[in-house]
Length: 236
Image: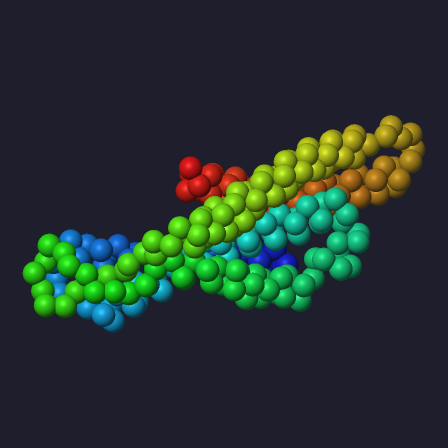
């Protein structure tokens, strides 16, 4: 079913799939280099590795940015359900948000591509011409990339996502309390059968929606915890 959250999760899963595929190809090339095959030391493969390594950062950041957007959408849906349904929780809004992430993040990550270049190298494999990635020794550039990638693209987003994670957990508990209060129907007179039946039906429908909301929110919280854990591990 096409919903705003599903649209954003599609963008997130696409980035994760490209990241995994890119990393598998990277591992295959590295293994061939260890075995001293000539192919991975060629200029063409070195150029591909240049984009491969840097695109891994782009795809990871895109996936993380999608996770933050999902947290914003979900918190808005729980905190302000009526206003969010009118403005935020629209498929078009989610699509444009995902599109913005896919365009803005690669632009922000451009300095990462400046940290390395393809150059001739000498290694253990005795070949006439060998090419590998040569990382920049410019201290200012390396420091700038560290602050941009380590702080702007990693630490700050992790803190933002952690804040939304706490807010979502609190909202989830609030929804659970409302569900329990709504489930406790007031006492009605025995002769008012129709009113009692209508009230129970209304409560049943409302509780079903709240349970569905809780289930979806728990799933998204699990995804966010996983993203924060991975980012903290990489940052450390």
